[in-house]
Picture 1 (cartoon, rainbow, N blue to C red):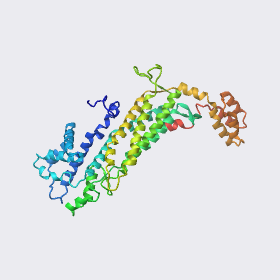
Picture 2: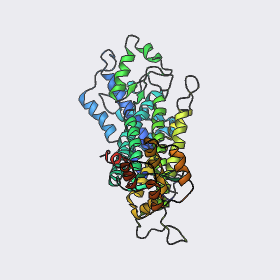
Picture 3: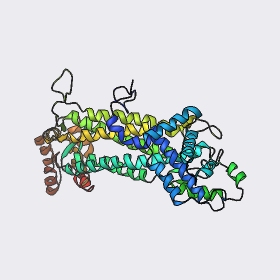
Picture 4: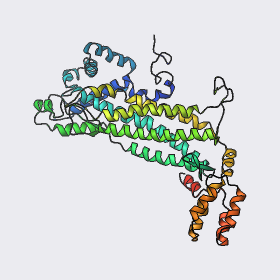
Length: 456
């Protein structure tokens, strides 16, 4: 049976293929092979520029061009060639080494130096750099742009709803009013902090041999400054050198990265649940799409499925990313292989994140504010003005201000007329009474509108 969106076991490559495909260039098996090839080629090129390494002369421009072309034109067919070699070697990194040697075997200026491909390397020297490059590219080219897109959409939504008053619900109960724009602005502010931290994550790599001590390097070339040579190489890839390692780079930066993405996802889970509640309360209507069905038996239903879908996929993403964060920095003694198999799932956690973002985009595009319901809710809860009334009473020294309002409002349905009669009966200056009489649940929003508009 051929692999299609219908036959795939994972929904990432099946049902949600169209949403996750953007990560294919960074986290597929083909991508991993290509990034390993990049590291192998760049290491070979870098060594050729080390003057003290007399056995490997500086490569000609045509040689560099040939090697660069191997990377630039690397295709699915080439990936299949590597996998065919792997069937013989039963070793995925060694297969890339043999593939590269085979490609230069007919190049007279390169083939004599083929043993400098993968020179002094353990497989993890190649792998850790490949994964670092994959993560750096996948995050910067796919995850961050989509997160920026979401922040932009939410910022526009927050400012457009900056002055739309709504009843707050602390503990699920009627509370001091806010605006819908301000509540969305809260999410935007959190996402901006998270996005900023994500953009500052440093990606690390190592190139120091089987146990991190340059053992083989120094036997072959004891007088070379391998610390400097490898640092120059790693930084040339756009990564940071991790000096102290075992056979593996300890993956602490990955734990930081995945924790950051997980925290971002948690912010979005919080947002999805709030929007779900607002839809349930009628604060938002959902624009209907011709042909869509909400329920297989209840024709009237328009379910908030996009926010539910997003919440579920964010949860799956966090389950994987949090596991990776806790697992990857742990390796028995100088190494065990548990990181190798778990690392293959980094794209899975990020794919579920991307799927969730796509669902959010779809859901947000269908939202329409329902000010009629918002206004009705506010007008049915005049008791929320007990807070400003007792605060003004305190200002003017009236005894038992809180207790008097508690007795008057707690557990009761208060009308506009009843509340205003209470205000008129207070021993307050006329100016203070006038100020309180102008208050309504709709205009008692503090500076919520200003905070929402500050996002512009």
